[in-house]
Length: 196
Figure (cartoon, helix red, strand yellow):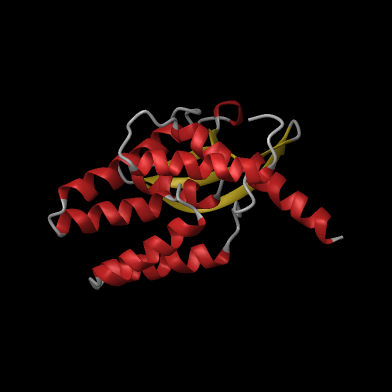
């Protein structure tokens, strides 16, 4: 992916998404996530996506499946590697007895999730989970059965980490989980430079 301009990276990202949508199972989800961060549409601090998440989960709980799916589709237009949206879609299509779509969205969110888990164990800064947004952090905590209590931003050896203090639903113990947030913080720093 070196020496490829942002437009070409976006085209490659869109090509991989099309490949994924064709139900190919040889997708490298880590590569897909990292490629997304190098496209012009990457924005790890997009408030609109946060609002869409709120609307999507609120609609799911009513339940208003149509509204929830509409929110998910809007999220996909901005960030197809959004695990929350694929997770909600998998739940809805299971309830709608659409096994093909249920299986597809489950495959995607599990693939994205596994690509984060494979990056480390979260037990120390050296083995921190590599994430591209805070949304990934909270989704990971949710799936691991951890209730976040508070978050602390750390800088160690010129690298940025989110230290999450959470309570395990399995043991009720307080645990520490480290996330490497170099990528979103680098994006934010570059955005600030452009505005000066």
